[in-house]
Image (cartoon, rainbow, N blue to C red; front, side, top):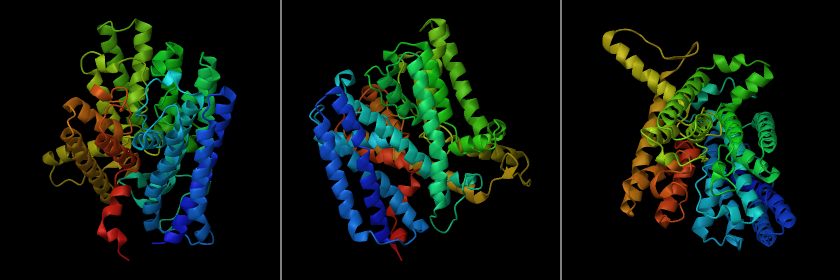
Length: 482
């Protein structure tokens, strides 16, 4: 393990992250909300800590290998989450204990959107800006991780996209081509953010709200600047705009790049994962809108806009609210929560198990049914015209198995500390899928949850964001052997 170069990179990351604390200082000065000192102190602490780690290792320029990649990927989210918690801890409004400050930071950077804060409408503007900014930065980090690193590390089926990723990387080590990949995808991410912000602004949001909500929409994060989330704006136009950009953010960003680079939307139609993702979203939207109309929950136009928005918000694991979907009729609350288990496409900012894996599991099940009728037949599983190797299928099943094991363990922890079954179950769903809100006592905030639930929730958020294996592999003795 090349600890020196890992320390150098983490130190640099912390110093770079400290620069992201400067925009909230400017926001604080503009709005005179009295929080500039908290961000200034946070900037100094994070910058000094990063320099302290970087300086002794500054001349270590060895290249990272794949095993180093697992460690640095996990430490990336842990170290930046700790750094992100510093301004929350130093702030006077809201006054937060360490576990709450860290929970809010982890939730932001993993784009989960679960919160321990209430009274958002009265919080300082700089704190509100910082929460939204955390999610946007986390979204960029997720795209780079999912497209540039996880395929190379062989995480549960995502290596299917290795050949199509812009600037393909070698399997033996992390190369400078990752920078090329990150640059290309960051352009798309920024363009979508700007387009979303301008659309929200034109639809009636204030500039502050438009920018903040565009950050969280493109990152599929779910933080809002208002307690009522999107219901605060009470606008069908804003809900439809949000639906469009949530759908786009749930698409594989490598696919966005290929469509942009080859100047043709045909790339989307030819992609089997996109077709499956779009079909599931369309089916969920149709069922929701029909049931809302039948039960007269809203007037027809609102049923369409709120139905579209809430399905795409929950299914892409953004977690914005445009109404109390927990009180919607029939199967809708449970159906929406279950859709979050899938999330969006691989290599997007969404959480969940990803459409690619669900599609492969479904096709494996269909193949086994056909094998009952034709036991000697050779029936390959294909995506488009490409056969999927057994190694990838095994990785997908391994991922699904570990996902369920982790889910059950976290559920038992929540039940053990006295949570009711609905709250305990959906608290795990909300954090492990990076959804944010759940049902029961966690439908709007985790503030009243015991500390054990908050700590296990933070572990779930990072596990979900790192695709389970990346973090769990660090706990195996084989990983640390030479």
